[in-house]
Image (cartoon, rainbow, N blue to C red):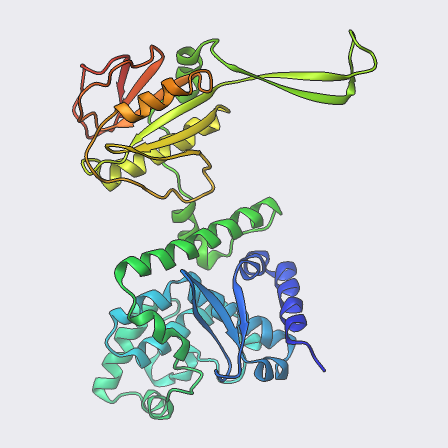
Length: 387
């Protein structure tokens, strides 16, 4: 008896060899097998999406058609079709338009029987790679005019069990805007991970997704020379890390391993997450944090409004969840720095500057004001403004 999981694993391997991005993207997607759907589809899974496959249908396909089917579903996820569908009044037309868009990026011989192509509606002479929105508009006009017998026939045949109806998408239609953002955020994270792994393995990002990936991976250029400034600002203040090395000879004690001594600065970066800081300013702060991290210093981020909401080591590969959005006080971050004196070598505070100066501020404090903020010269320590 054929094991459906083994077949999907085989498809994954083949995709990694032929189209690495899609194979790596598929690895990060949860899989579910069910005979409640006629073919395959994408369904909701927690705050993300999962691939649901009908085992009997999948087993009946050739390996080429399995690869085409999987790529078809992955493209629906990457293009955001499940989240945007409820913006269109006619779901059947949208499903057709979405299929027409993504099937152009799959070799025709890999599409299972019934896969929709532009040639499926010869009387409409649809343009190549025009996008789902454009196809929806053209199909809607053709339906109103009655100018496409092929479309009318397909619409009459479509029901809840049709492979064109994408029945598993229904659960996305009623999501709140907040829930949609959570789902899309999870998908974006998976796309970024697949991209990074693809590049690491010296693969290429598919052209059909290059614009999307570029947007997800884009980091604004640094608005400040962090490498040069931190060298001068932090100076010789540093934490010493030692690591035992078996390969290195210990000159003083021959029976002991050698030591590798490394000096590394540990900077506490306070981030103002109060309600007065808008989303564009927070994006600006994240971009500057990324460039600070590239200098090689260890960066710990303390998010604060009127209280300390989060203290975590900064990781540019992970999405930044904002905690706070209340009033503003700089004191909690300063108090944290003083309580952990010796753990950090310097304090940098990213803010709009709209709060009273804190007490007992350490001497090696740098205040970084957002590009849209007003200069606040009353803050203790060095103050700069992003341009």
